Each structure stands twice: as structure tokens, then as C-alpha cells.
Image: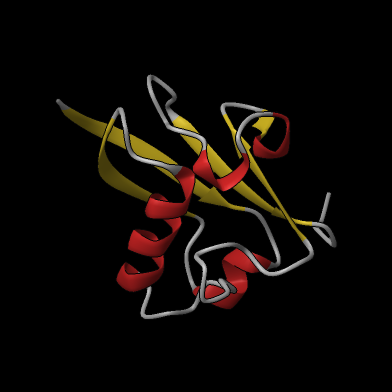
Length: 93
């Protein structure tokens, strides 16, 4: 069953890619990596992803307020989560 996931980009990343929010359809077994690759395609390759579908150093990725590094990293499944946030380490207040 698919559902909507909101992906938020914090400044200054949002300025770089030209949007603050993207919504996408996902299934519960979709991983964070798969979502980022999909969103990157929608944004014309503007996300700072490496060839493995992982954010370049300098970004924190949160799934419903929890850093994915304390879960299964980029292999974390979205399950019933509703929001993915990408925060540049040099983010604004």
C-alpha cells in the first residue's frame, strides 16, 4: 500500500535546490536511500548525493525527528513514518 511522505530541506540546502518541501508516494518497505534517489531525480540531480545514494558529508537526515544513523542508516525503511528532513550541518536558525 502506498502513502505520502513529506521530505523537507532546511536552509541553505533549500535555496540551493530551489524548494523547501517535496511530497512523494512511498510504500512501507521503501528505504531512505530509495527515497533520496527518487527525489534527486525529481529535482534534476540537485541533491548532494554520492553514487551510492547517500548524502555527501555535512548533512543530517532525520526520519520523524530521529537521526537515521541511530536506526539502520540509509537502509532504514520508512514504515509508518511521515516526514524525512535533511539538515545541512551549517543550517540557519
